[in-house]
Amino acid sequence: MRIAIIGGGAAGCFAAANLPAKKGREVMLFEKTGRLLQKVKISGGGRCNVTHSCFEVPELLTRYPRGKQLLKRSLYHFTPGDTINWFKQRSVMLKTEPDGRMFPVTDSSQTIIDCLRREMEQKGIAIHYHKAVHSVAKTEGCFSLQFTDGSSYQADRMLIACGGFPKDDAYQWIRMLGHTVQPPAPSLFTFNLPGHPVTELMGVSVPSVKVRISGTKFTEQGPLLITHWGLSGPVVLRLSAWAARELSLRQYHFNIQVSWLDDLGDDELKRRFAVVRQDHGKQQVLRKDPFGLPKRLWGYLAARAGINDATRWGELPAAQQQQLHNNLLHDVYEVKGKTTFKEEFVTCGGVALSEVNPQTMESRIVPGLYFAGEIMDVDGITGGFNFQHAWSSGWIAAASMIP
Image 1 (tube, helix red, strand yellow):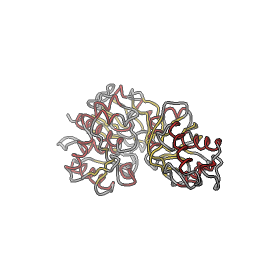
Image 2 (image 1 turned 180 degrees about the vertical axis):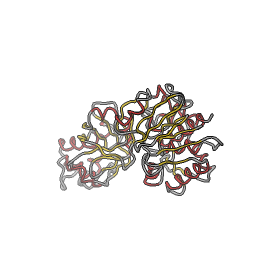
Image 3 (image 1 turned 90 degrees about the vertical axis):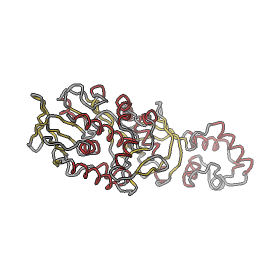
């Protein structure tokens, strides 16, 4: 029995690490670059966000913009709890951060990499680098792999776990096997505001804001970070994931509306303005922020409302108060372009889930062909959810490929 695994990322390596060694079984892992587990290495700022402490599958499913029809089966087979136990059994302990993200207690992604590599070595997995697939054909019950360097390999079973491709033509060899591929589009990116004065506030963060993409139903709440190129932080990244297809169609040119005061309504804001005018009327507006916003942000929003250093709350003209009101709750920004979040490139799109058996990860079209990880049309928001899908699908594929 010869098994070929295409891709040395989280899904491919986890599948390989779960294939028990057996006499007469040959497992070859082919990686197109010169290193394994590159996303694992850089994830979480080099700490590796292994999974998330969300243990109820229905709740876990809400963290995936795409892929629920497969995940509602696969995540029950191998849960975040199973991930924690799998690494614990191999002396890798995980810890939970306040936001639910889970990391190795060493705070080093190398711990995860070393663990997976040890497991693969113990299983006798042969790793081949710089092996980019050119084409695959299935003839007489076996897969014939051709690589771009001119080499080839014959396999009885094959697992495709090479992650998502940013360009649609990169999936052509998978389409040649008879599979449908949903066109790829970037997910998890930040919003560019080229030349906008708000970027002068780079480094300012707000714990909880509400951001909505104008003209759509897409709205998210959470922490926001102002950068030198635009807006980032969890609220923007989650929004980019949920709206990935829509924003691709708009060629990343769209408006967003920001409420810097999160869920505060218009009537409540008017009431608070009245209270501060009455109780602190002699104080300068720029020096008395009743909402606890970062000082630089408050000054920026007030200045845009035409409020100067001398303006006092009790003397604030109605027009300027209304403009400040709008700036706080209905602040509009024109987004022109995107920036990939650090180096953690994620795509939506990939192999159509209707063509994959969620119980086994085997192709419904080509017997003996399996999929794991982001090569399928599955993607999650930040927080360890993409890795959990990699572990779950890789584990299921490994268990299913064993004869």
